[in-house]
Length: 128
Image: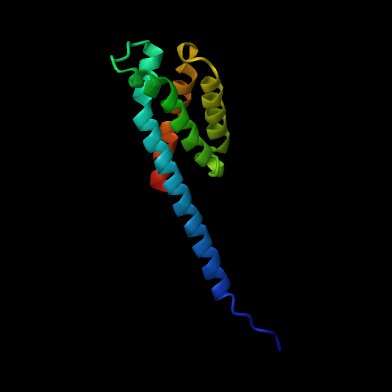
């Protein structure tokens, strides 16, 4: 005579945990993708060295807040194992640029990384 174990509740909990993790990762990836899409134009303007508007807050928004917002989104994205390395690199780059004076900030590397990361995130939001 053998002992019969009902593993169905255990399997159900495991499936629920996997589904919850996938949903959480999909949400984080979607937020990061939205941030990239929103801030990309600002980084393109910085790279192209286009003039800022008359409002002094516009310059600060493009040269400082864009790096802060993207850095925060990448900090959250580091929780997703698939994107951890790229998100960490981009977060560190944003922090490095924020330590530089406003007029010396470069966005070319940031723009290259988000251009590389965006299609992978878009695919992941639909697949995860």
